[in-house]
Amino acid sequence: MLKYALRMLRIALFTRHLFRNWLSAALRYLLIKYGLASGYVIVKCGAASYKLSPDLYSFVVNAYYDGLIAVHRCGDRVEFSIGGVIKLSICDEGAFFVTPDGVKLWADVFDYAAIFETWIYDIHFLGFNLDNWIVVDIGAFIGDTALYYASRGAFVVAVEPVPRHFEAMLRNIELNPTLKPRIVPVNAAIASTEGFVDVAVGDEIDGEASIYKRGVKTYRVKSYTLKSLIEHLKNLGIEINKFKVRALKMDCKGCEYDVVDNEPDVLKLFDVLKIEYSGHLRGYTVERLIRPIEDRLGFKCRMYAHNDIAVKLGLDKHGMITCVRRDYV
Image 1 (cartoon, rainbow, N blue to C red):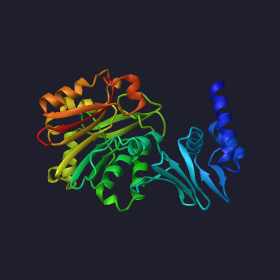
Image 2: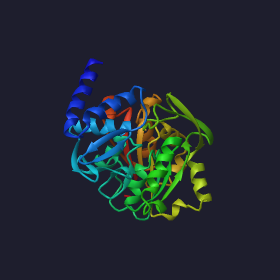
Image 3: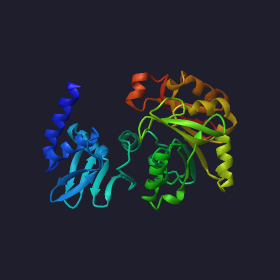
Image 4: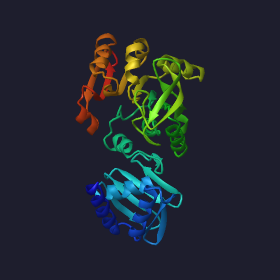
């Protein structure tokens, strides 16, 4: 606790290089954090004032202190450079992340880890040109991966169960009107049975939401199997076999085992699989995925660590695999 308090004090003092009203901004953030006030943190940069959500203020000052972002512009708007790749632009219209390919994301509802993984670490890379690809994106979260794939030319089915995440995804899609026609959002979970399941979240925006863990809050949501999702898409007029390349991306924190265990014939419809596996949530290892995908379905897989959690837990319990059908290669 003392270590945390000292860091907070050092950050507050450091932000005097960032905002003219650094002290009052820091005090207001603390009041909001501990439930003694509500609303936004007002910051002053140059001659202008801007409203930041408490989460965004916390991200900005912590990242600035840690050297992860740098001030790029301070005037009619505030612009930060994140990793020399992404811009965080704050203006009267709001706060936005802007990626190198021009994708915009609202910054009032975000997960910085997802932003870093998608556009800085590039863990979801499938190719430079995804024209005539379809990507079925299971666990689309706030729409970052759906927009990432659509910006490279793919048609994307963005499946996300958590209502708060789904609403954020719809807002982000609307923010990118040229990409909107290539994205079909679906508010549902993928599970072992069709019907309804409970998905647990630990916070309002939780990139670790899962039907296989406990959380602070749970939502009862519609569920599809992968097969019934494909049937649902057919009813919408979307035939995945009409596309040159069919890719399945799964980041659903445990449901990947249900798909591999129960629906191998459906997986054969795809040419490329990109799976973030979370075996630690179910007591499974990655071998339970790779062995049937390679031996029975004819794919070749590559396994890798995509974040610090994968390194800490070990690749047998958590990580990423990219699998390509041998006859596709």
